[in-house]
Image (cartoon, rainbow, N blue to C red; front, top):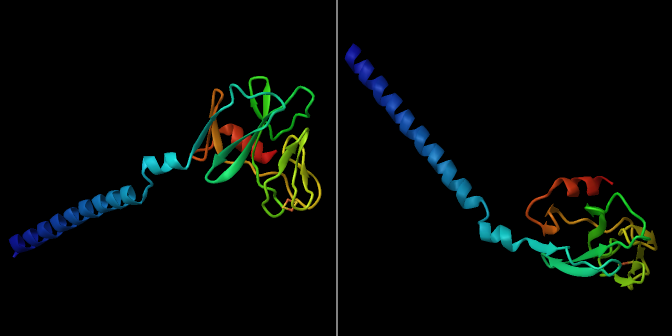
Amino acid sequence: MSNDTNRRDFLGMSFAAVAAVGGAASLVGMKQAWDPLPSVLAAGSTVVDLKNAEPGKPSMATWRGKPIFILKKTADMPKDGRDLVIGSDHFTLVIGLCTHLGCIPAWKKTKWKCACHGGEFDSSGRNIFGPPPRPFDIPPFKVEGTVVTLGAETGPEYEKMIKA
Ligand code: FES
């Protein structure tokens, strides 16, 4: 009787151990299946090198189908807490969609103007005139040296900018 009980206990514990290992292996497999592939993560990123940016001349990149405005500020452009600061250079780095209804504003000498309803944004991307209710949005990014990677991860510069 005692031997039967011990054998039954042993079988029960063995079954539980096999089930636990199998369950853990299944969870690991499911997580690997759900996580996006590195190629998918890379496809959602845009890499921009700011090394050769010309002061006062905005450029445009595309991230996940959205326009990204990048402006290296001139010395006389106002500095802002939303600037990306690399060394002594200040950059505006924003999603170039009007925060009113989503048109793409155009750069006009010192500010972005939205042709749809007349909204205006200053060189820092802040709304200064018309119906836009808030500044341009800032895309998630991280920066290494002068290289900005949009989309994959966020770095401390991004965290600081979105709080400004
Ligand atoms: Fe730009 Fe309305 S969409 S002002």
